[in-house]
Length: 159
Image 1 (tube, one colour):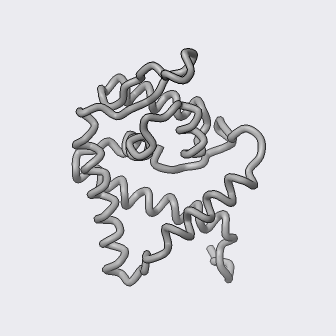
Image 2 (tube, one colour; image 1 turned 30 degrees about the horizontal axis):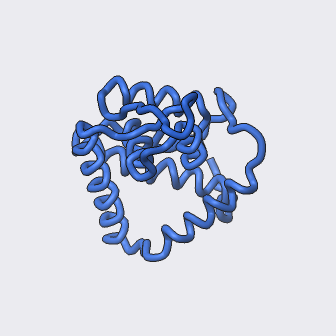
Image 3 (cartoon, rainbow, N blue to C red; image 1 turned 90 degrees about the vertical axis):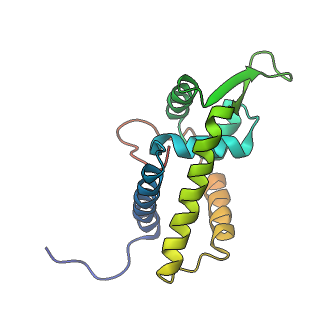
């Protein structure tokens, strides 16, 4: 098979890079005994708490069914709790539990390890987070309509 010359298109390049960074992060999580699919949702929820499910979905950019399934698994595992929302009786807030703290700490350590491994290979990450924040905010503004779901929307991430 002959490789075509030139760089990958940007969106494809970032998607493929995401997949490989996620693989590396998953490996570091597994070394620390953290279930990879729980880590992403748990870390974002921990940072944003207390948060409504819809506000968490807006931050994460995942379909509501995906988020609902992840949250149900985290609640069943005792890592997340639903508490009444004092501002809206029809809604609830999500918070991490004391049992989640070891997984959160291990996830943060795994993230630092990934950064260290990349730095050891000469990947300069200083300022990169700010650029990713800008990229995420801009793409969020540009993406319209409901989030893609189902088999034809195989977006990946640590969710």
